Image: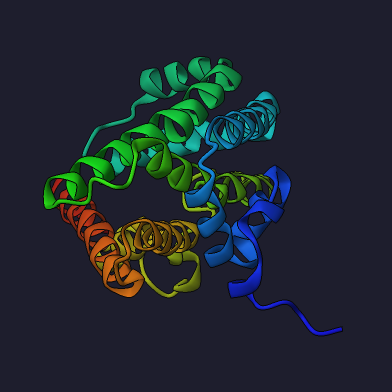
Length: 244
């Protein structure tokens, strides 16, 4: 049996779960369905619960807490802060509240980030005369694109457990082991995340469908902004933390 082309699939045929899966399998059809029927509460709630639960379970384990302390220590050193014995003991004490930290960061990087990004996109395009698109449509597209960020959290858990480190579990730095992690180049590729790049491309695709813009142009612009942020982080960490 031949596959049905994306273009002929009716948006009304895509329910909640098919949309979640469709973001990965057939994103164009999914975003057309989302634009036609923007329902954002479901994906935001489900993805927040899944992400928060996975993070809480990870940081409830001894391995997860050790990895969390390692992440905090590496971050402090990267920005030029000293971590003496007293500070390290404080980090170990804080790691016992790891589940709460995991839930808080999941909510911040989930619902809060989704609404914030949707607001920025809506306000950016609205002054240009694109008033036919509503904020719920933008929010729904952003929410479904965030499926990739939730998937990133789930994938990073076994990697973090195996490495006993949470930082960079899905970063491009893993593909360049020859680069010194403390060098400028190592910090730059370490700040780039495979799933984040995927998410940016999907978000650009969804926004392009909403506003009838070229998705490739939007993706190039958003990827440029993402690379610029990663570059700024690498420059800052190199300046403050130095190189090995």
